[in-house]
Amino acid sequence: MSVNTKRSREVQPFQVMAILAEAQALQAQGQDIIHLEVGEPDFPTPEPVTEAAIRALRAGHTGYTPALGLPQLRERLAQYYHERFGVEVASSRILLTPGASGALLLLAAARLNPGDGLLLADPGYPCNRHFARVFEAHGQLVPCGPQQKYQLTAADIEQHWQANTQAALVATPANPTGTVLSLSELEQLNQACQAQGGELWVDEIYQGLNYGDAPETVLSVADDAVVLNSFSKFFGMTGWRLGWTVVPESWVPAMDTLAQNLFLAPPTPAQYAALGAFTPDVMAILEERRQILAERRDYLLEVLPTLGFNVPVAPEGAFYVYADASRFTDDSLSFCARILRETGVALTPGVDFGEYRAGSHIRFAFTTDLTRLREAIERLGNWLETL
Picture 1: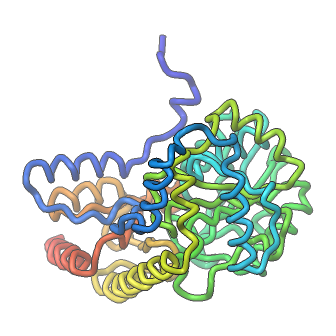
Picture 2: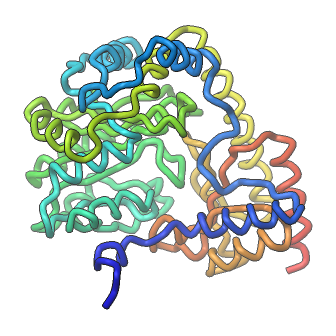
């Protein structure tokens, strides 16, 4: 008799974690590894944010907070939406969670019944469909190519919506592609979902890490859309595990009850740290880091095509380049494993992000400095010449 449930067997592991484990093993043996696989930049949390947490700890703020988070942080986020995006959001609609994963956990528990479907772009972040599966719902993957920026469109909603579909989830900027949806596109998506009697959920986790137009929020054009966000990426607080969701007011009581039962409350030190994230000094640090990431992005966009990788859509946000490697492989997992062993460069195979042309795509994370990026490209170039 199997010790695992059917749902646990159907939630697939990150292939990149096996690559990371092998990379770390090779490092332990003395090999120099350049990490371009993990979605975590090489910047520490800004010092004023860490200091805010230290002050809170010294003041004894180590107990539980309310299940939906510190009222003052929810109010500060509402203020942030007003200051940065010109959007009025009631703080009561902003629910703090243990990472954006906690927010998606709440949404899946509150909004997806067994058998429901969640419409998703393929390629996309795999955990989104896995959260649906844990609650006996299902991710409904829609192949999305470069001609549509690897993003769902309103036409996709109309074509692929099924009788059991409850919601569509899009990401802007997106992982793994870095593409961004305009406010017009978001408005059209929301209208398409409403026409089907469904909901639009928008992952804005990489919001602020934009390299073209200024960052936007779907709440500017669709106040009834659901937002998922996080302090991990733009604010540089990955390990603090703090995110949030913005939902309709009528959903809050049920999600409060679920939060009490699922995780009691978000991490208290992380919430006090986040209160220190909105100062001009911190914002200046974050802007400087965004510019550094932009330089890395521009470098990769320049050099990857010279190696034979095609980048049909330049990333407008996040810190990834999703490259077509079909000139070299249709088995991205084996290809990345071989690159790691033979060059010491760790990359993420496209198979981690779905099914559509996944075997011929690779994600490059520009999460290390330019010197190391240049070295990685030199190693790759030399190796590819031997194929």
